[in-house]
Length: 284
Image (cartoon, rainbow, N blue to C red; front, top):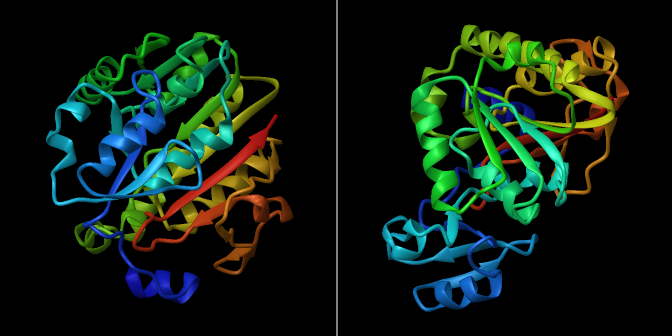
């Protein structure tokens, strides 16, 4: 599979295991105060967005008291981008359709200053346990946790102005050797079918003029550009350009040309500081 990706996207490297990716949880601690703490235990570099840091430290940050108390969240830099694209505000009511384990949910709650409402949905008790744990640890008080298959969520009749669909995917963008080895074409097709069903459900939940941000940590065009093309041509969504430093989306795959709108989506190429990610912002 790796040869397939490099043929499309060029030479790629896996994210470094020696760099911690840290997001300040501003519900509990200002980013500048967290930076002081992180500087005391390692070398710190700010990410482009103000609440993210790369930290080189021999200390296991996941076992620090500050992490356990929810002052920060360990979250890959690429994973922080979909909430930034959705740009939730205090007072919004939004849907996080596939929320567990809650990295993006807690990020959006902080962006909303714990005001408004986040419906944080997922599909199994095991996943909800992780989600609830992180919401509690981070002091999130504006989230309502629900358990439902995302593809059936529209049946509840709720409407939202903003929806985050960080879809279940193969995860090949993590460059995990086990995932790269085990991922097959059948697996990719299975996820692609599920993602289209989730997109259909999300569109039914969306208010007129509402916004969906669709994202995956997959490198597969079938899970990314193909699904955006489906959203544009079959679900009548319009793609909006996102101002991130990233690679361009593909304009065709397997001899199929995509809608010109697909080119506005963005890919984050795997490197030492980023997992591979795909992000697309669409409006109804």
